[in-house]
Image (cartoon, rainbow, N blue to C red; front, side, top):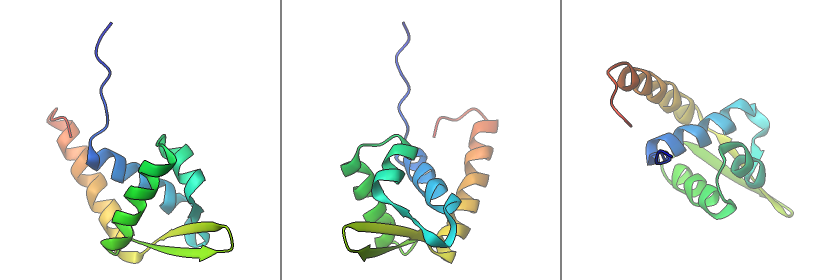
Length: 95
């Protein structure tokens, strides 16, 4: 049995941004982000808070839920990161 390959920090960030970007302007709650990105609730929350700190996402608290929305800067960053990931994969470097 081969050793399982884990995602890098960049891979996780890419997955989180992709999930939130797919939701559009209405954003996504943390439990859906965690489920879609295959992360625990706490890891997903940590990554989302990091992305908010960088200005790539916004956080909105409403009643019981916290919704995350990707910013214009986040969309641009996501597209640039996807180009980089494609380039890295084409030369067979593990990111």
